[in-house]
Amino acid sequence: MTISSYQRILVAYSGILTLAFAVFIFSGAKRDKTARFDEITVERINIVEADGTHRIVMSNAERFQLAPLKNKMYPHPNRNSGGIFFMDAEGTEIGGLIYHGKTDKDGKISSGGQLSFDRYNDDQVTTIGVQENNGKTRSYVNFKQRTGDRKEHIIQVVERIGALPKTEHKAAWDTWSKENPTATRVLLSMTQDESAFLSLKDPQGRERLKLNVDEEGNPSIVMFDKDGNEIERIPKKK
Image (cartoon, rainbow, N blue to C red; front, top):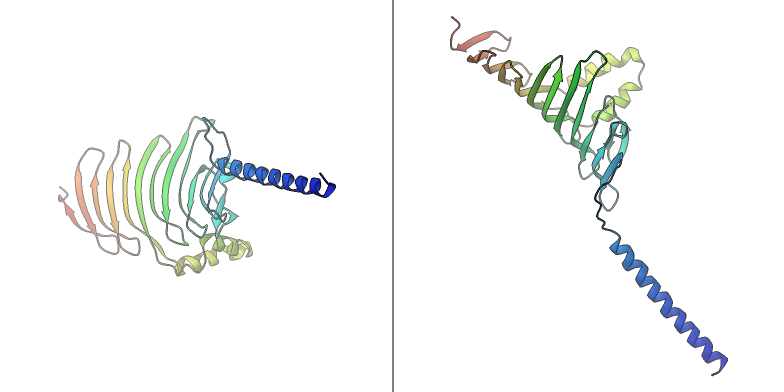
């Protein structure tokens, strides 16, 4: 066998080995894309699309103090509990589940949880929740009407107004609230050992109709005018 023949055999052999190694690596990588665990302990889990866009985040309280907007994370102004939040196809928060609960040094309980759904590029419009404070537990379902133009997400509004001098904050928020009105339209609420009621409100958030069962089990239907004056009640007051 000549030297040139021997060299050709070595080149061919090394090529075969390289190809076999590549097949092994890539097939192994493909298999490793799925895994099964009996238990996993983490502080945060991000569910993302193939391009990295966030869709679901599950987190403890410390790592939950953020709000996603267009797939970027911004400090949230008042989020201090753990939970789950959901993002739309653009990576912007569109709803979530939060929860908390503790007993303070005086033995007072503060607890609650809320599942919410947001209007696109806006804040909550539907919430289901429970709260416990001062020994009373309240469960509720709340439907809000938001009619702003959504040119700015609430995260952007918080940043913009926060950058202004503190003396201008109130006026800026008043202006924004006027241009982006929010009104509760439907509220279903139950307080443990007390009343349960359904309140229907007009677009300005004024209560116009209330169905109520009080703490003694007495039912009533009450209608109000736009100024909050009672105009009809069933049954009539005795």
